[in-house]
Length: 405
Image (cartoon, rainbow, N blue to C red; front, side):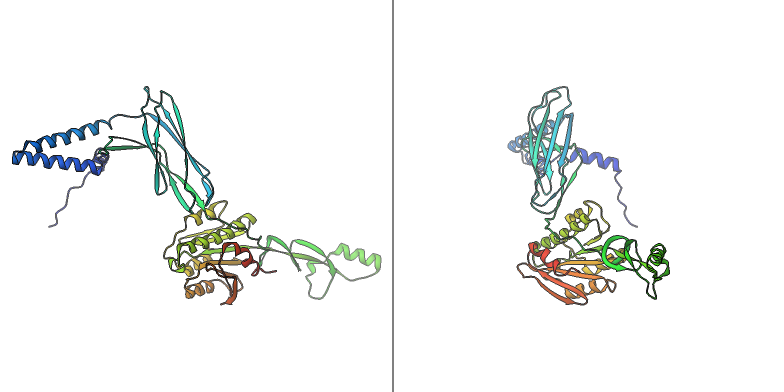
């Protein structure tokens, strides 16, 4: 027969946490010391321990009294801008308004900014008084930083009891990777009536180019009868004239940034790979070409606006294999024209080759391998172009030698 412990109702648990939660570890230590001192004074007959217990209990009671009361405030938090590149400036503006009937004494206000927190001491506010504070936010490193909530703190000077009240929601600050200029993408290799016009002459498309004489095998539907009739009536030539068109082709770029922790010797190499991927993604979004992006657990098709850069800001090193991410990319967008895989110098070549093999034949695959300090090197491997570069500033030059005419 198993012994089943009684369950605590959620309402009672929440009420208990609300009452006991403000007590700090130091406060619990004071209470334990008071109980032990009282027991020692009672059992040993030492009045000094009894006095110590009374003093500790009095100190804890006074600390609790300092947290009693309700503060009527209106706190507003605004982050501007909410999306920046690494190194750019961003700030949080905190506005506090006293809605109470009496002046508000100075109180501390805590604003979490990522892994740290900024404590602001609000001045005394009269009834209806307003105070603004500006906090410079950390943007040196790429990432997503939770800003807030803005929290007022009430408690005793010794830190025995600390009651915190959150007044605002949490706002995410996206710090995007740094980017460099990349030349615009050329027209793709996928024939599509919604694509860009090329200089390749075609027998069937929408972009009209000119007329030429009919040769056996031409589609009779493209015969231009009006020009044929004019030529026959003016010059007596009976040759048929057919229309010529220019191919319209569409570019669909696939981008995979390897997030496997074994692919990079140091963390800075991973950041450089993300910056290279962000530069390519920014160029694709700016050119309004189709983009499918995969990095670690995130795979997105046709990300709009800042979504692609937001995903790269969230990227973290993990155990995701690049070949599995590439396979997901292929299943999601089988009609990609160009795929770029960005990885590190320590990447497992077996996984890279499996990633290349997961793409259909005829798809152009570029593997960008970041090796800090290396010169640009190109080589063919498993039907893909393997490009090694050692500096982000060389990215455009590295890609220029691999573009199709």
